[in-house]
Image (tube, rainbow, N blue to C red; front, side):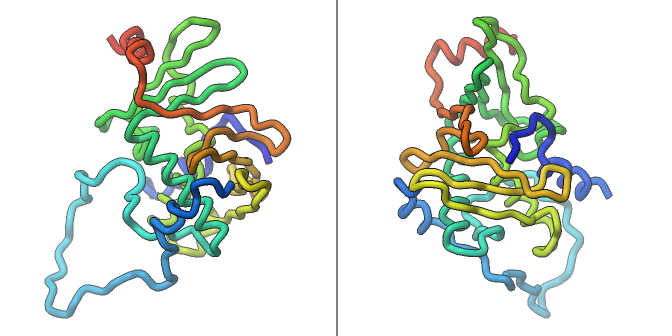
Length: 231
């Protein structure tokens, strides 16, 4: 927390470049993770041998939710980012359903390294349009639901003052937050996120929150949708 774009978020673009070259229910979640101080880096003790280490491939996909939030510059940003992270964590654990006026896409979390375009968010996905089940429509870009979480992943990889990390958070109502970040240009584009019981449940333009969010666990009927695509 304007324009919702159906293109790759700046989060994925910046990550690729780097790798290759509402207050309901917010008090509890706000207390869960504190903002990161400016100087969080630790140096190796003098008696610790410096060894080259291979990348840690055993770390969980997505965010490490136990770590301090690097993006938060004030209490309002911390409040919203905790809600966003709770929502991403819920999606990674139980699944996510993104419903628009045209279709409904189901995201089922999996353990797989076969998603080069989604290195931090591996899901199987199916989209239901006019009653027909097909492959998910988000394979080449992330839905805006993940944008705050994706930017936090970048914040843990780049310098704190990197231009790509520029963002703003506004409070639109007790249960709504405006989140602004770059989408490939100089302007900060805004998405408004609506929150229910501490989780994101809708997002879109400030005057048209047309995308509805819900979470798993999936019913047997919803699980069966994946069987039609992943046989």
